[in-house]
Image (cartoon, rainbow, N blue to C red):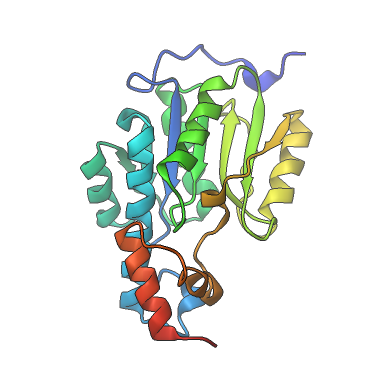
Length: 234
């Protein structure tokens, strides 16, 4: 069977790579609203940027810089992209799925065969975790959707998609089930990716507190542990 959405020109490269990783960075102004009760707007902005910087550094350690693209509306995101040689796309703040699609379209226009995305706020992510996504992307020889669930098993913290034009992006509440349903409609095989560093994002107070016992590996870890000490047990 040949899916209609597989009929697109054979790619050459994304500036030397047939794969691409999109990292959407949510608006830093007013970031982490679910932590607003315990952290100031300034603290939340610094937290969002520190988490994004940690994720981007891990990506740059494993993915070719030419295959990385950051999507976000803050100039700090552009500066972060510039430090690792990644591309930066300023989005309109319409949400995670439109932001990721913007990055996918950018990659597709430059010849990507396989695209991936990872949340920017993954405090436990390592280069090996994002390198695992790269290995999946490079090994993908047919249509498919690879999903990395969050710690609750209902959200999606990362995914790999072939082909990039498949309309499967359904980020938001219960995204894991909705991503799987969208893939089923298109006949895309679905695979789950279980990586420790891809499970936990950082949106709630319990996410911050859970990091108190972790050995610090980055500036984001030091910051999160300091915030955990300040907010204290609830």
